[in-house]
Image (cartoon, rainbow, N blue to C red; front, side, top):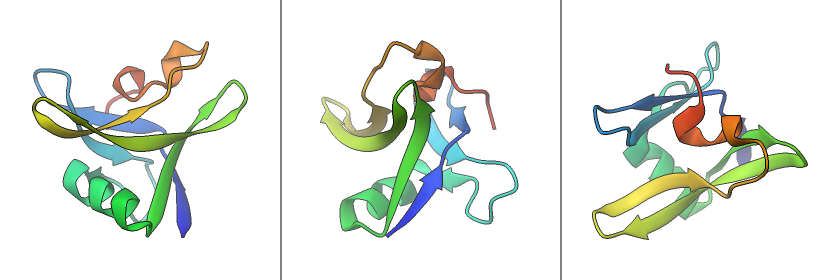
Length: 86
């Protein structure tokens, strides 16, 4: 399983995450559906840098289907929706 560092995210007009990015990486941008598949099958893990190290991106099922998120920590700027756009 390869780990992929996420430094940016793409969002739609509603602010929903549509892709994970790290400029200069061959896999970037990775569309939401592909990232969900990678995580669920265990092929790749995606992470952002948090105050205590790596915060892994998880797949969560909500009322409107699956979405990507990280667990919160004291540093809000590393949340997927707060990352710079890609």
